[in-house]
Amino acid sequence: MQAPTVLLIESAHLWLGRSGKLGAVALHQFFAQRHCLPTLTLLSVPPTCTLSAEQRSLIADILTFPLPSESDRLKLWKCAFPAQVPLAKDIDWKALAKQLVLTGGEIGAIAQEAMFYAAAIEAPKLAMTHLLYVLSQRGKILKLKLKRRSIVKTP
Image (cartoon, rainbow, N blue to C red):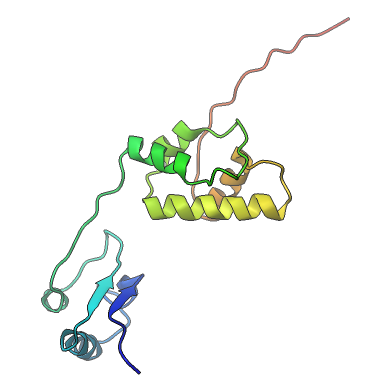
C-alpha cells in the first residue's frame, strides 16, 4: 500500500503535546518516513496545544490561523445554511456572532447539526430553538434577550 500524498491528521494534540499518547520514538519514525516521501502531512491542533522542542524539530512549518472576527462570524453564520433550507425569522444572527467565538468549521458543523435536528423532528423551518439545542449539546450557552409582549386584559 502506498502512503497518501496528502495526509490530514485532525486532533493531532492527542498524539502531540504534554499529554500525547504516542511515544517520542514512534513520532520520530512516523515523521522520518513521511519526510522521505514526496508527501505533505498536516496536523490540526487547538491553539492551546504546546509542543516540546523535540516535537517542533520534527515539523517544518507551523501555521497559526486566527479566529474569525465578530463581523466575519456574522457572515459565516448567515452563509452556513443552503438557500433551500427554510429559516425562521427568530434566528438572532448578531447574538450568535457576538457571543460565540467559534471557528468557521465549528459554525459549519453546528449549522449542519441544527439542520439534521430540525429535519429529524420534521420542523417546517429551522429556528433558533434548533440552534440552541445543538449548542447546548456542545456545552455552549447563548444568552438571549427576551422580547417583552404587552398583555391586554379584557373585562
